Image (cartoon, rainbow over all chains, first blue to last red; front, side):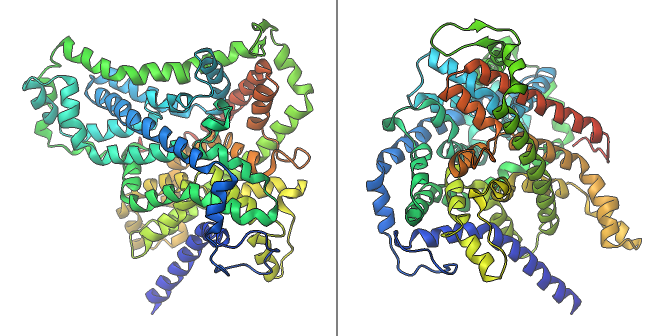
Length: 276
Length: 310
């Protein structure tokens, strides 16, 4: 009896917390289906009155959404593969390099991760302006050349370190060079990490607001994140349109998260063994 | 920790086959090169550029002019800067303790694997995964005094309905409220920390007759201390910049500068008014302040609690 009561109170508490954390999102999806231009609702709308998918059609005429979507996808399509290659190369090299050097490189990656990004806006902008990257999508892709985040490098490092060193030694004794060992042995064995880094970096580039805001000047190059900013100026009766825009932006990310959940938790698992 | 579980006999092999040669190591360095070069160009070089830039007057067109400490000396007399600094500190002082406490409470609640826990954990992480722009737009609607659901809900249960983002007194707390739910990273790190505590400790204390509260304060929290410190430091760094997107989209820094934070001021000074030297000076002050806070925190509690070399 007592344990039953306890279980019940656990589910009430945890279920309540889960509801609070997901409620704004669910509300938003419901409200995005409400026709625009109506007077304010008098009570909280739990279910849509009339399913108005027209909001989703209308934002594509209100804003050049197709162009924004295409730009966002283009950035992700270029940046994600480069990120996976650069980060896994670095993680692979770190895992195989001899001891004192390896330790220094791990320390460097952890240190680089601590740098607040706000600090980098201004000097990075000046560097990009100097080499003519501003107002091109290349400015957004640039971080991929350092593996996007030192955290991704560390994720690969941890997953390669967990492989028995025999595997690499055998490949080397077979005469395989470093690149061949990475391509034929290491990367296939670290496929879950590669998938996790792909998903995480996709979310990173898809969501990135600050970099496009800093480097892009023309509507032609805007990605979804900066393009949708214009919706903020809608008057309150247009809020269903604003929410439709938000849902278009978050849908791929939430869908990816829910379908690859195991990978997301897995990506945090090495942090478990290493103290974050 | 887990990777030292390879069979002991395998370990010496790494040394038995000596790092073949310089050639192999050079090849490894070549694989490391893109990441290292990228990090130097995109992180280290910009970081080093900030300080000299702060000592110049530069508009991006004419060459930078040396002004020494002029930019920095002008900051205390700049009302926008002092307002932004005060708001940023208030935002951090409210958000970080709330987020760490809430993440800790949720991690303690959802630490054990049992039916439904995976679903609950996922739900807690959802707000963190949502893109910042979409998240800000949703909260712009949630907090709308007339059209938003929050005030409708508050009115339904008979509570006063504030004007949220349009009232200087509630705008900053409203942004803190919206930010509170994005605590997924801390939640996951603390879950991992709790996972690393051997269950035997708790069981032994229970057999000895320790109550739930006693076990929490005498065993779990001290063992979790390094993780809590790590979480707090990460949250401090994050809170220094996490208000940029919501403030830009939800309030624009207003009303009456009530939500003007340092990142937005730096953005406006540098990129709207093209005063790069001033922007760099503000960036530098923010960076040094953050570093000092982290050092102070580390000095105060770094030695506290049990350290398992996590």
